[in-house]
Length: 347
Image (cartoon, rainbow, N blue to C red):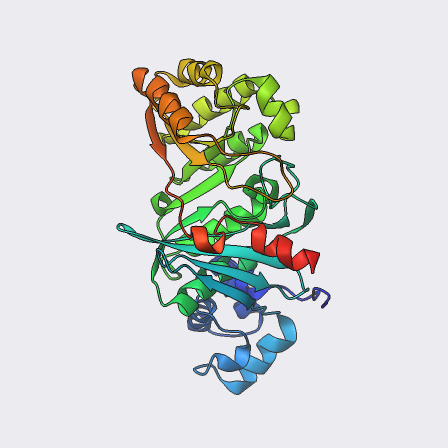
């Protein structure tokens, strides 16, 4: 395991910060542009930046760090081409990313933390808790290296992997600005979705930034009793308070909220839950994404039956709520996040 260097992480620097750092070294402005371009490719050392003078490369290696992840495992689905990566980070910790193919383009699901502090009962990512947050560069590298290794051009990003993105707010926002920069990967905010368990004060803070990304809220139950059983975050801030924050987010950004709802047998999939969810979301213009539960060996929770899913959908549709069922990609490689890392940590 390697200790994190005290030197600045150059790949996490925004363009203006990089320009200021290079100017302080007496370098002309165009050098910062050259280096930023390199940093948005999967380079693992300054020596690979071949159009820079050797003296500058040496200067950079003395003053900055440049980390690169290692793809410790790579699984490719024979069914739909989904690619799952287990990345080994500089300190020996691991995170996961998944590349998914869609008709509208290729999407990468990235992690924002090593482990997760939220404790959701149905999720493999949170078993063992949070180890640490990821730096902006470590999130960006998941996109860069997944694109390079898979050979698939990434056009969409979802922050739905291991970790709670709003728990790592500053680094996640820095990542978003880096990946959105026209001189970098130039992935538009409307092609990025951020998933949160519902940290209300951070939702309001995010709304204040006016970013045009899609906010996906992991709701999973419409009442406090049920949600608190499966999502500890709800004990600090109930469903109605969360939905009020979502309303403020929509008012400030004009971006429709997407609510994620994992269908758990006999827990949150009853007629009562369907009717209450329909009542609370009616007229909000929001979208509900029903998710067939991915079974986790350490959990006793099981997915809803197909018939229960159909009844649940009809209840929502009667209230004119836009509802879809998430297509399960990569079922033969356990493409849901957290499972590969969990296997590795057990070993």
